[in-house]
Length: 256
Image 1 (cartoon, rainbow, N blue to C red):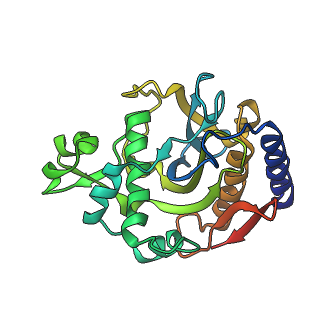
Image 2 (image 1 turned 135 degrees about the vertical axis):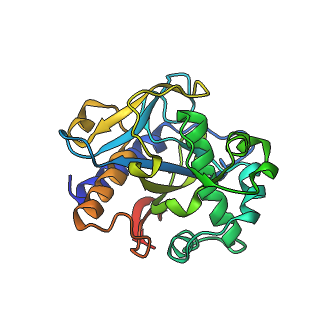
């Protein structure tokens, strides 16, 4: 799909969601900060690069029956721990662009921490490096403390941002990060996640994406990522990233 066709697919999805919208209890649905992590394996011999994805069950309110990347909303523990972390300059600049007044570098760090925490909770993968002072981490990061690790926020590269259109009962301002799977050491084929967030987890190759149920925004982000990978810039945080949101009743893409 071209960039224009991906944007058209997002607009069609926005219209569908708008048509199915139910009145929100107590007013508009709040938009919550969220983060997701795309783990990319370039070592596969066939089918092109692979992405670690999980299938959300039909009982989920958001993205039910869809293959998604690990991720979720920013929690208080992420914001608490963010006071002890800072992101590399380019990554911080990407995340602090086009944000509301009051959004700080600490909020940006909380996004990266949320992506790392959620990835562990949903896949069992610990994205961390050795640390001397990890014992004082919040309990949500206990798995890191127990192993003497600190979340490796500097390994993550922000690649995109998207705000859920009106319609769904939950809406998120999601920042998409990428990481090279080689950062994780040996690339596993089997996963034993700590929670039941996903019905199953596995690697999805570029060549098999059409065989999986993906939301339009997921396909769009993967399309953008494919272009960056072809350019060789997908791990370069200095490159502006796409920002998808609804403006004047239509999906709009900006670079930030």
